[in-house]
Image 1 (cartoon, rainbow, N blue to C red):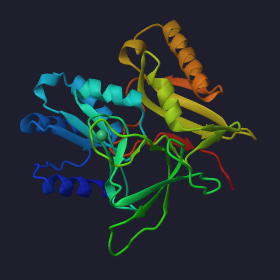
Image 2: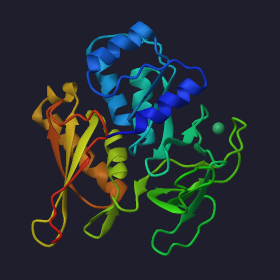
Image 3: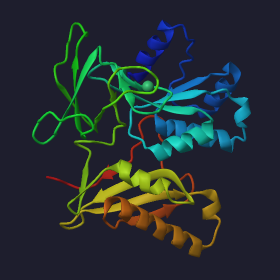
Length: 297
Ligand SMILES: [Zn+2]
């Protein structure tokens, strides 16, 4: 079961905010309730926020009808480009939250309105960054694996838990005035890294490349296969409605742009397939971006 909601719910209750627990799914009702209650904060996964934004546009509901001020999004990796899209479609400020079930769920770290790094609640959780290969502790602004120790948790304290999440601790202070340590957004996991033709590839890199290409939607799937000895990677991307009604020639041009953008980002050429709008599976929880069909036995 997805435990994320409880931390948010009780946290909001603690400072006197009213919460409308919705869970994922039933998107029409989500949009209705957003208008009826004039909710000002939305919290969910970034991919579901994207989907809500899309649905809002599709339903023809103008942004003036909803009252969202900020969104607290987490539980999966996302990019700055995705943040821009969410902010545009939902008319809010999109903020990053970080947590993990093993430590306490959401609330280990939360971005402030400056959107300049995620503030770690370091009076409760002691953060370190290590080199995932050697275990060596790294300094500020050096990228590695986040390791957390709980300082105040009772019953089951966790000592130097390896999160497998790749980030860095930031030097300097935040303009908001809070003095807690900040971390950068998670850019990958030390274990979901795909090695394609010997090159390290993170799904977030593919996403970043796709979001820079005109005419495609940020709904995508990465399929990794190993037909013979070498890994192959296929990226399926949804076209926008406008693009899909265009000529084949136009589609081919965009396909080439995607291939080029991905190659510029990860250094290797991948196969790209453009799909019809809304044909890739939508997620109401964590998006399944990578389908690994390789057999390692
Ligand atoms: Zn701040």
